[in-house]
Image (cartoon, rainbow, N blue to C red):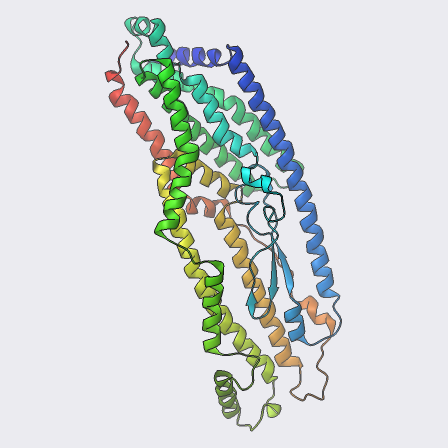
Length: 476
């Protein structure tokens, strides 16, 4: 292939994309949508971040200002874990509007996240939200298909294709050249968005190495996706007898990629790996807890046996003679047991969800849109894995809080009921605040290796199709 010829076809395709009036209107509409999505997403991000930071400070202030009291009462008073928004969440909303933002942490009980935006909004949210990522993933490929449907089919109809081939141009040069031209059109929109992400992250003070790495990899993966879209558009145009047939075929492919396949694979994943309902999940935990016993009931068989063994080990006749607070010891054991049961059930549930998501990830080998969507959400911290990562950190903190209060009770509260049953409020400060640590981008990429492989596989596969089969295309 000759570089000059490739460049010639690419430049011709790029110029033609901005020549027609209809194309210019499409470009303007798309640009305005990107501007609106940026303004809307950034406004929501700054507002939500300010609100969440305010409540984080208030939660911590109220915790530290609680008066002297029994530590177990503080364990039941609890703490609020508030999920921070990722700096790139304004780019790709992902699951952000449907997952909860706040978890109430208390002793002996694991609560789910509440106060999702979907749960507190009107029914209009079910129709979807406009985000920058949605425009780049869904609408821009449709525009590229609309521009690219006649790249070869149009030349075939007006006789230009036959002239090009007779003058020495090869099918490979025509297909790759016109694909590069379409890719350049996509870059007209992608590069300003990437620059905008960099500027915004620097402006809000979130331009860390991890965030910059995410932006760089996002640009690369979107570039691969647009290369796939461009090659598909030109190949379909090349095998279609007429431009009209090419347009209909490309619209069908777009519907298949962006709507039909994602919804179908989601349904298949749920059918192959059904998850229990919330009621069934919680009742399963409750049944197992009942079998283990109630740590608040001194006459419970399990905990009565535990008390007898502790008394024998310490060679005393009653808990009042122990050198530590036995109630705190019993609460600590009960917390350990309940946490183990919950974590085991949660692990099983997460495995089911992972199997469902794996079905979707594997389907990205037949639908590159799914691959890019998964990578984009993961890089923006708005995917399911990022949400469960927050849940796990909140649960770890809940367990530390409960056991910290139990340790204070064991060491500082007397077994004598007539003695003081309160400790100083200064001890509440000894528990550090919840410090949420998001997944690093390297961990995110490892989690999405199937989607990354699918995008690379699509580019390689389409390139091989052009190299091997382009010679069989017909000029008439």
